[in-house]
Amino acid sequence: MLEKSDLSAQISKEDYKKRMDELEVSLNALERKLWEKKIPTVIVVEGLDGAGKGEVINKLILPMTPKDFTVYAESRETEEERMHPYFWRFWEKTPEKGKIAIFDGSWYRSVWMDRFAGKTKKRDLPTKFEDINTFEQMLTDDGVLILKFFLYISEDEQKKRFKKRLSSKATSWRVSEEALSRHKKYEKYLEMAEDMLAATDTEYAPWMIVESEQIKYAEVKLMNAVEAAFAERLAAAEKAAKPVVNGKFSKKKYVTQTLNQVDPNQEMTFEEYKEKKSELSAEIKLLHSKLYQARIPVVLCFEGWDAAGKGGAIHRLTNALDPRGYKVNPVSAPNDIEKAHHYLWRFWTKVPKDGHIAIFDRSWYGRVMVERIEGFCSENEWQRAYREMNQMEKQFAEHGAIVLKFWLQIDKDEQERRFNERQNNPDKSWKITDEDFRNREKWALYEQAVDEMLMKTSTN
Image (cartoon, rainbow, N blue to C red; front, side):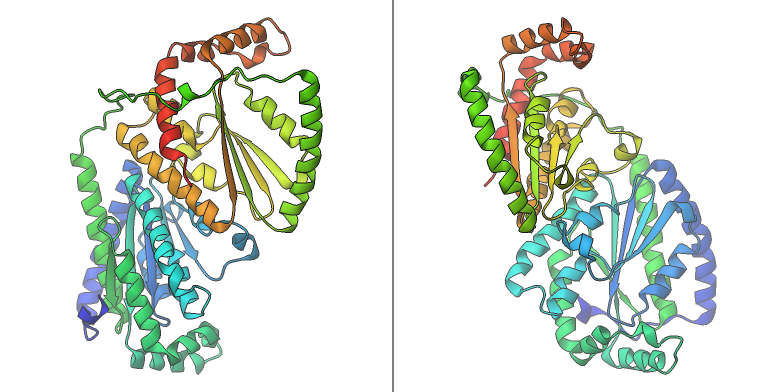
């Protein structure tokens, strides 16, 4: 990609001033329309050291309303970030609908700077490139506009800029030892950039090369591209038909197989239960301590029918755990802030750090169950959710997390018995709502959805 760039490209002072005046007005108006249409935007600015990322970003944000954008300057991982899956810190920073997130440096550090420094091995690159493309596709599928820019300068220009900055105490801090090291091996570093650009230049999130030998030209080229992308997205939003919140199921009925193979009427005596529970609690208590010492994170996901006993199972499990080392996350309908993000955002923000346990009482699987059946998302959204959830759990596992998922199975008659028992017990009646009884009427639909979920998301 870089070999096609024209590093001699320039713009005159007169044309620069005229175009910047026009862009200031245009970008301000377009940014307000993006907010009105609730279209989120991610702008990634990468590039060679000294290419002017900071200067270009400063010009870009001048016309924008400060409350509608956030600039993130990404550097080395903090200790807290290293104790989470790699994309945790970036999911936290994804913008809510209508807002703009600008990244000065980004998730590309792992496949470029860290590769140059020897922290990322060449054998790991395919997986890392796949994870990056997966992350960006998830966002774009959810309506996020992603713009990616790579600022490019020649080796001679980089040397000249470093020399100028190092000559003044006011700017010398901007030239790090790492940057000087990369400059000494400019060609090697550039080759790694080419690998990165080629592997992640996708239809849904393409790269644009910005020749930056003249900063003014770089500013105009990048801002022209942002203006065009904003206008194109808004035009598409105007033309788009109102999405149909549809169907719970296609005409082709999904044949239940998995749940029919389960016998929910397994029993043990109370004495056996007490003995087993005591043994397992002692073992879990010891293992929890070892997990913490080994810094192994754990994600536990509990799903099941209403009244199947999720809360009771979680309560008995946590009785054996150190309360400082786990957190139970009860999941209900998303609030307004959560609805303004990708549906997985609220789960990524609760990922446990290394050595800790996150327990989800209901989870991201609501996307392909209640949200699917009740029409809270479109068919396209829940159909792609199987792939998205598998990819998220894969990234947890690649980080070293233990991921365990439980479906608590009871039959319809047993559920009715438990509902009636709860209704007649003043201490438990609060657990029953009219919604629980309404959901019973859709038992067959839920059974099909659960079975499809189990078959499509039970992975190695």
